[in-house]
Image 1 (cartoon, rainbow, N blue to C red):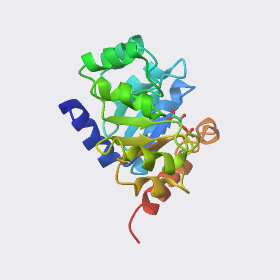
Image 2: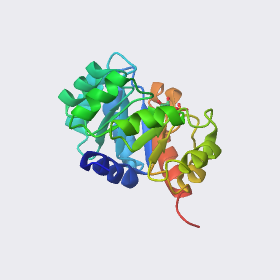
Image 3: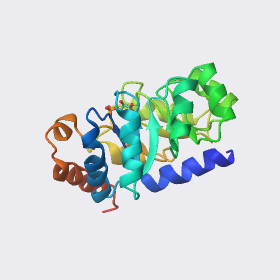
Amino acid sequence: MTAKQDKLATLFKQATIIPVLAIDRLEDAVPLAKALVAGGVRVLEVTLRTEVAIPAAKAIMADVPEAIVGIGTILNAADLARAETLGAKFGISPGATPELLKAAAASALPFAPGIATASDLMQALAHGFDLVKFFPAESSGGIKALRALAGPFPDVRFCPTGGIGEANAAAWLSEPNVVAVGGSWLCPAADIRSANWAGISAICRRTMNSLKPA
Ligand code: 3PG
């Protein structure tokens, strides 16, 4: 692993679960981040899926110092540059293009490209990325697919997302090649809309507790 991938693996391992945030209203950013941190979840992926994503990430960085903010849904080199300029701690993408992999390899930003197949993974490895997001995890074959990938790629570490929730997070995390899991279940859109911050903290706590050995 390169030093920056190593840093990312350590961060993801400590995080264990990473919420995938789509923030529609800027005013929700800080209370949402505080609710996640209160629930024991500090590493946050703010996706570039909404118009206010960048100001939302900035607000969280300024007002919630306990949060470790990364940027998700990085689709191209320009998105990657936006994440770097912002001071994000890491970047994540749902897939990868040769352009994005090249830019990410040249950048100092710790980055996890998205892969769904062996060929995707080989492209990522060719650019030095051996910690990747497995997306969409459940519909790309689930844990069985991940185990199959461990055969030819025993040293690759994964952060699966897509279809993961309270019911299956522990199963994914018990796979030896999984460092963390991500997903939107920790912050349902309806709870964000209704400012149910206590509810979001409760989901985080419940999920964290479900991961503790009995
Ligand atoms: C992602 O970008 O990682 C996914 O949208 C999260 O998938 P989920 O909504 O099924 O958790």
